[in-house]
Image (cartoon, rainbow, N blue to C red):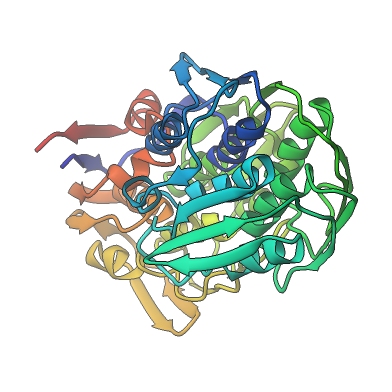
Length: 417
């Protein structure tokens, strides 16, 4: 199992290019299932999750090939409708296959999902929404068995603006008969990116990117070519790293319009940040000011940046607080940051961080994608060596992270054991 060895402290300097967004790419890959032809996705990151989704498509009889950022998918003649446990347990986004399979074949068998080792993230909103569209749902020996003799449009009100449920229900509703309205829909840019691809392929979708999405079902979705948007969380991670290390980094091929909440908080830390249409220039401060963070659904501060900002606040000049509203137990990084010398008090969904003058290197263990990146950030300013175990998590969500940080001046080495 691979690990990272990082020697700190360092000050990052240079430029980094952002990859395509994992959370935009996976729904697009699922959308190819019902196109009945050859699709091409561009700006696709080569991640562990990308490879898992390719395996899933192949299990369904859909050949897919990734070559230097371009993914070619041929859904002309799929031969399966089951997403097996061995794949779904490693990546929750495999559940996205459920909606397209039911829409195209009238049936699907998808394992209950796995993924990162934190928090109960129930899929009841996915299943309730599919039931509203006319699907019959049964849980059988750890699998979701779904069937429908033609889906029909419905009004669906989500209890929370779940990205996963919004994706799955959009993918099902585009081929449902009549009109579907999704209320309290997720507003993330990744939802808009998916809708743009589907609209270009013949779907009738209005309101994507807002809390109310209206979908008029069509009889077929054509094959499509579409470009994956930049990964706003990856861009935010490198921006936070520049602030934490007092460095100066230009972040290219990103979309600052998707990152207002993160940029605002980093500026409040004392960072100097200039934005252009496709780039962000970040100059870290000599002294980091403490800021309070409350996560929320887009456009609020993203839960996927909470851990990285906690690493920044661990060496801030004062105390800061973190309130996690999206996944209230997403704090598995706290004990690992404390191993590096961070002073953090955790009480339920609230963490109070008292900044220290310096962190110290130590062996730590990654527990999920964003916790992994937070530990890398903390290791960059820790004195001495930090060994991060179980980095397969970070390979799920960050493309070539050691090479990118290395180009910025970090001493980071991958060790295969």
